Image 1 (cartoon, one colour):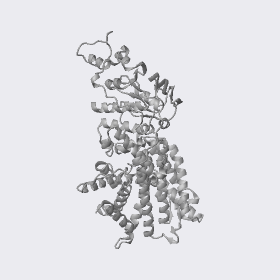
Image 2 (cartoon, rainbow, N blue to C red):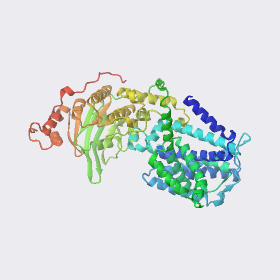
Image 3 (cartoon, helix red, strand yellow):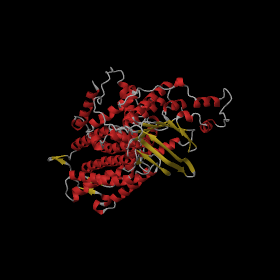
Image 4 (cartoon, one colour):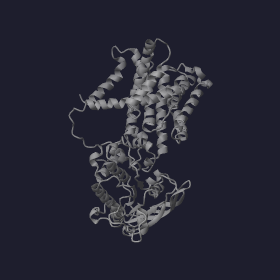
Length: 632
């Protein structure tokens, strides 16, 4: 039986469970609670497991949805369906306000803030007279659709699980999209910003999305229970939701269901088993859950669902392997390309740029210009300030002084994602890939700004044409740098040298006019350096400007048009490679203590290094790519 048939059969059994003969009513009630909890935990999977923002306050948003519909349907006589809309609107406003303030925090401050407003909303529910104070609100009407009442346990089961399946489908779609890649990159910080991802925006989007799922769960809970009180919306439940996400698999969509089902079933069984075992009525559930958490963290740190998924792959490993299908995005429309400036046009102007960290001057009034189609190298000993200069140009760090202009417009003071939007894209000194994502998705993140498809379109699967174009462009750039055979591999499974090439493909996917490469040849073998050099020269011939930091002098001297040498944050020398390799100040900075003829004892390390810097081996020069006037 094929995998699709198995999935269809499981779905049919799930939806028909209440009407199957011999199913106890308690099972249906338990499944209702599993569905309600799973909705809340699903939001935490996206918020905490994927986005990296720990929240203990999701139960407060469940309360907003429950109390909104409870008050409107009892005190105002409003339809429960309008109560759903009102609850979603109120939750959206509250979550947006809280998110815009608290998501600026990092480390342990964010979880502490979620604790604070969870407690605040909990006590608010229990102290407002019109909400019934601690007694809550009773007499909530049952849901109905076209005169068909959903008051029975079986009817609510069907509604709850239909809503949950829809939420699972929408969340899976969201993660498999342009917006989803941006959400997965929230943990990466400046890397994502440098490819146009507005981190502050996506943090709030994820926060509101998770809150809305909690609000829907609260609405369903209120009309299933037909009464609400503050106790289910307190801090204890917020901690339990997070516990479920961790146990089920905080990075997996179906981990929400696995975690909720596991905890609720174990909790129910503990209530029956523990008193019989220990002969006391003392509540030992927390102790048992503590032991369970230790076991999960020790033996299944990624949660239960990844273990189930690996088991499924292991069971199916002996099945006949079908031919690799043609990628669905293969015939997608190409993305529009940015017109590149004419050769010789001024692209980048760095004027007296300065960066101070307290009393330390990391970059001391550096100035240089770069024209279209040029390849410029930024070299110097370790600690010279090269990467800091990159960070200042690309907006990762704010300037302490000076100005930067790109394509004639000032960009100093702009955030990194706005600078990337203008066509200045960079790579980083240390590899910054999302290791659990595929190589293709990592590279497609670089094209984030070349599409406008948002969260709503992605969740409803209405972004397929745009997504196909992004993936087609990512595949094209991977083929261009010689990594087309590994595009479906996890990025973290590649060796370091190939990961650097993936980063370059990702940068090219952003269609830059100026490409900043921080040590692109580090970790590459000789043949890989040759191939990279050919690609970079080809880009230069097409009109793209390149600024690179590199320590491999053979690579730099054979590739660049001119060089800027830095030492201790200051400009030491600038000129064409043939001038730089004979400059005594440069040799002094690199080798130190050479005499007036820059000599050194024969066979010494200094003599070897001086030879490498002053006269690169012509036989090891990297081949020039064929000239062409058209961009591939």
